[in-house]
Image (spheres, rainbow, N blue to C red):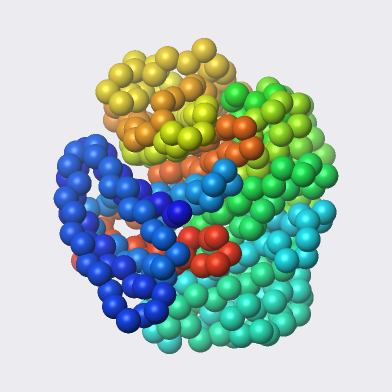
Length: 430
């Protein structure tokens, strides 16, 4: 089962859903109204191949893969028109490899075109098999595809596809993940991984990563360079680490982050950073999941979010809020109408990126709404949860620096690789 959740904050919205079926013989259209702070849970079986969603307001769209106990969640990112003199939008891929799994369990990249005659240029970081066309893409060789509206380009490999470069002359959605990834590779507890890749132009220079609440195990921090000549400084719990670099475009590094630890990353060029949760090692709960993290320049003032509500699995749900320290006040950070209260708040004083306060707390399953009521203040948010044999995580509310929008449409593509793709298009108010 695949779920797509449409969530609101303080605004009402209308939603129109068009489903296209695998036999392509018919479509089905349904219209909905979402009231203030309501949610719409759309559930799709494999007989549905594409779902197109149109909404009247900027409603958050979240996706969930729920395959028995395996699964992950992701936040759908808006896809903007390519404006100005830029001819191509560029994406870098953060992916995964599981070296001790069968060769038919692979990493997956999905590219979905928003319009017809979209030119997609792929430069693989490793050898890739193009599933649909049966083509073999050789490492570092440029291949050009022409994709039409809502068609998918599926790229798979047993290798780690992190650093693959994808460019397009029209809006696309790029997803990356793994059918069943192991983290670390020697732990047999694998899980579905999925995240949507933000375009390079919205990536930042400063990131803070802390260990997950509710786990005895640590996690893994992975970052990839977007251009040649990238250097990354790092501090972990105040200790200065060796500088990473120089890194060329597509080169990545990964380090273990132990429980109770926090690392600050500062780069001279934009980087993309992901945090990967581990499988069960020291405890009996959890499985791998992946979160692409926003940079410290992408603060938001409000965001609706969703914690998985699976009555058959006993999840523990958590959030971690990152706030500039001068704006950290539990009375002005409001969760579901009440001030937050965290016994796990601490301040990171970093000469690299400034002072930030991080607060982690347990939350109930279901729909939530977080806001900062101080004018000009904002936060970053990670949402995650654990249960025996499964986990999930994502970061909602990525601020891409665009605010004046009138119309949003979403396309969901369901594939045999258990990955769901979502296209969100905005039309800018002129």
